[in-house]
Structure formats: C-alpha cells, structure tokens
Length: 95
Image (cartoon, rainbow, N blue to C red; front, side):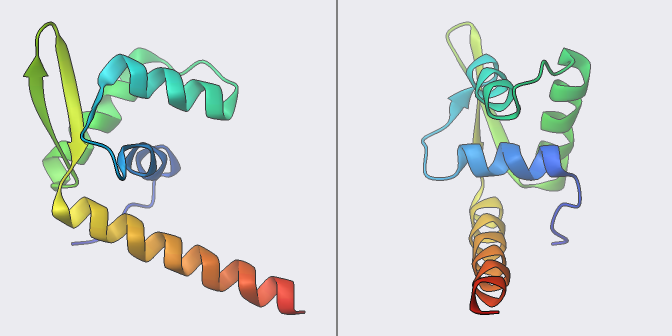
C-alpha cells in the first residue's frame, strides 16, 4: 500500500496512532491546535474519507459521533514513517 504524500493525511494518522479511535471533531480540534490554524471542515472530512478509502483508517458510529481509528496497515505505515524521520533527523544531528 502506497504511503501518503499529503501532510494532513499523515498528521491525522499520527494523531490516531496508539488510540482506540477518536471522534472526528476531537481529531479535527487536535490537528487545528497542532498547526495553530483553522481547517476547513470540507477539506478535513475529505481527508478522512480518502484515508478510509485507501484503507488507512476505518470509522464507526458511537452515539452521535463518527469515531475513526487506524487499521493495522495504517499503523504499520505510521511506524515506518516514524522510523524514517528518526533516521533522517539522526543523520542531521551527526553532522
């Protein structure tokens, strides 16, 4: 499965990593706080739909909220991305 080239989609997956899922609105709020910027709801939900279509996340309804969580494939990609970042930052720190 091809990993994501969209930073927003990657960030959503990172925020979901290690959780049992998060309601969409809380996920959006966490992303907005991290970037200190309001995110257009259509763009945010479009990113979630794309992640679901690509098999990185899955959703379920919990009461009135849609809750999103990483699939196993999504979690594996986040781990690989974190390892790559660590490798790149480590190389920079060694210089």
